[in-house]
Length: 520
Image (tube, rainbow, N blue to C red; front, side):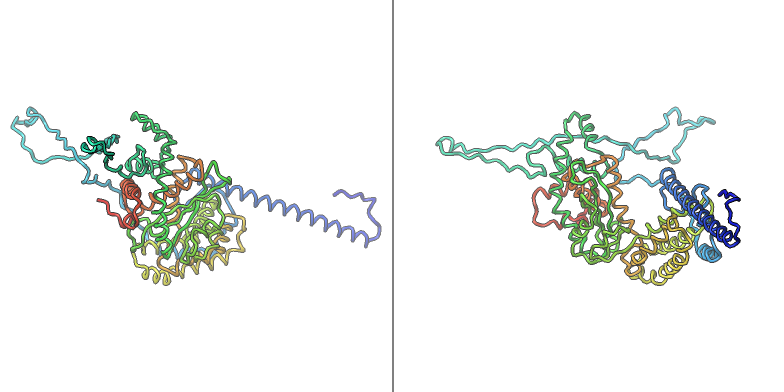
């Protein structure tokens, strides 16, 4: 600020007061500039963090192992005090190094049909090159190759002879014609058999082959089968499967632990712009673990509101393992959190921390890694053994991690990636420790995330559902297919069996539950 010397007062007191006011104004201006610079620095750092996270998601590995990222320097996250160094040293000293075995190719299944081809030397070649003596067989070399035989389509022509009475014809008596009844089929008066329907359904929902591609495939066989016809068949089949899916749901709601998740879905002719496919599951990914049924159910809604999950789980009071979405808190279930989500936040912090640099994120990741190491050793243990081990070992680690979070929450900017991770832990801690209460609960919600993945992969191929009715049909058929897979069944065979049985409208569906079905 430029001051005219002639305008200065002669009185020393007035001059002093003017200088003090000028000093205050200057200090305020400098403070305002410092504040702007600090805010801009924080924004720049946040943009860099977002860039590093986006770069890793786009080009990096999808694994959630502790990564290194670019050379971004974040002073707040690079400060690691003596307590953190001591904690890391303590964790690293207890870690065991595991050596992975080199993978070997598995032999081809013995039950596959085999064609043996023998390639032998000619008689002229069965002579010794040195002495011209005759060679004798000392053994043989064997190798296997896999040959693919393309599928073929055949027509099943059903003939039903008609019968009439000759005597009645002679006397002119009214004669009724006798004929065998039409066999019950999933699509009455249609050309589709249960095998064709199961092929169409599994191709779309298990292998992600859209109907327009299947239409082209059938055209190559000389069959005109439109996607509209196949879509109508799929909806009809979903209506047949609905009672069976309701049986699945009844069994699932009787279980002590349920996992849940949700993912968006595009529905063209829907009331709202955003639709969601909710997934609920229980048991495990492997058949018959601890005698618990493995069930995966999908539920379509044109909303992500809490009423969707509340209505679906009406009356359920067991454990519900979910992520941090608030809608699940409206249910009557006891919520269990997902440690994988908490770990993911710290992995993002590690990503922006810098390549080959050790910071505070490593402390949290190392402690969480120890929790997962304990769970790996408990994989095949009983519910009681899991509970006891978690109380003895896991609880101590979680207490140590929580104390570390509380100690560092005021040292880290809340809008940084590490700050977000610390906030997530503090907000979700009461749910993240629920798994310590019961050996049936998992440490994370990966069960549901793996269950929703087939739908996400399929969605990348067929992109959207045309109507809400089609989306509900997809939910039913995904439920049947994923539940069959979780119980170790061949999906195509299971679909055929169910379609044949459901067409007869049986009074009981117990024999069709996947854990009651035996496939040879």
